[in-house]
Length: 486
Image (cartoon, rainbow, N blue to C red; front, side, top):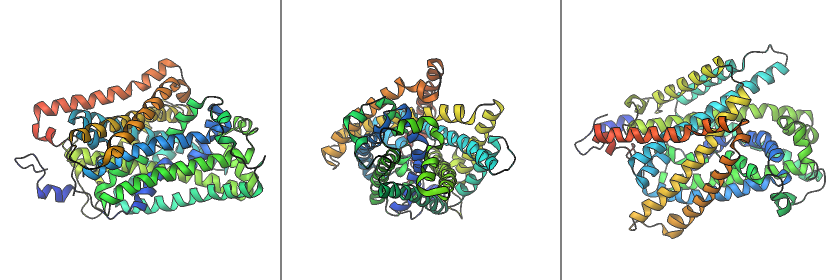
């Protein structure tokens, strides 16, 4: 990458390393909502939230989490308007709290998205093996299916982002559609005990372990905040990115809350915990069989698999663009910043991420780790806590940045009040996640502390990298917050 004497990218460099596209708000929303894997959350996480969290009051936790993240989106959108860079957490924390802190956030973001993606690969490999075995096919190791999915995702990720957005759009419409059909039938039949607002009453909201419920609800939102990463590929980023951010969190929050309510109504507030306890993994399939018949159960089974696939494809696109952004800023190998001349994609970054996922899955297979009880639960636990830490840092960065730049318009609500309220909510959620981390990962405090330690260690690695660049490569250090932009 050619650098001018001022430390900025030259025109030729920008031309070869800039991502371009015409993504509208709808396409970006499809990708980030697909990362949230809505059917997997309703079919897989919601039964566990009902069982381990606050029972029939669990759907209310989605509303609480949605409110916290909507407040967070206010500050995120304010930054996206005044900082024309595609690095999201990486860039915003760098502008608000300093370059080294920004690089620490970048490293932590890569840890977050990589762990959640590989966690889902493990779960997807297990689920594919189970589904095909039930159809009479011979049983194969879960990791073979996971590696096959990595290869498929790698092909899509190598090509232009429009192809991924179309695939994700089709899969997302299908999985949301089946849940809405199921909910409509539940409402039409009156559910098991009649329709009511029982999940939103105080007696149910505060029953059981609402802290666990909130923790699991926040985990279901991972990925919505990635809208800013697609800035360079958006049609009109100053309008598209804020619209996509608000639309994503509202759609996810409303869908989760409504889908969770329908699930409770399908079994009845007094019976739903018992139904979840019998077999939480099969609860959504049994519910579909009860209300939609065998065809509905089969459709749910198939769409649960495609939902997991959509999730890993979306996170692949997010990670490759994070790496591209960091490479363009000189903090990762420069080849990761290259853009394919025909596909206009960060193809080398995509290949690097495909290799990373492959190596991790092979390593877990050699260690004979269980794909669900270890790969999925351990890595998703790390990602859940890490994303809360990242968003809390971003809230601080918004307040700090606008505090130093009072000449920028935005108003106190967007630049101070909403970010501070979001920060309070995120800190409370973070404390709950730490307290219940052993339950989340299914192990004791020794394992939990070891897994949680990856978060400060990763941030420290980013800070040390920033310090090294500050001393050894001043031009690269100056570019930490200047990822390629239009």
